[in-house]
Length: 126
Image (cartoon, rainbow, N blue to C red):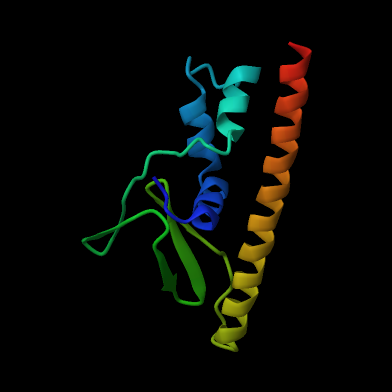
């Protein structure tokens, strides 16, 4: 399990493809409504996988920097920013990336809240 909920939310965003694949129980590449709800359930934790880099393994949530780009281990894959590295003001690019990640987590939280409201409404209708 993930001890840090903010880290979990970020990983969930980075692992969207993996989450959809895990939720697609019949492997038909289409999510039924129930599969979709499972995917968005805030208590659902994807399995933790390791990422490899230079003969080392890293846990989900581990971060590294490659040139001027930041990378996060998410569901067994490195997910990196795609900044053009020109050698100028690399520190500024890093700050911008942190701000982008913060905004991304906030957007994920909004989507989760919307999904929870939708689930409550759908449950009431049933």
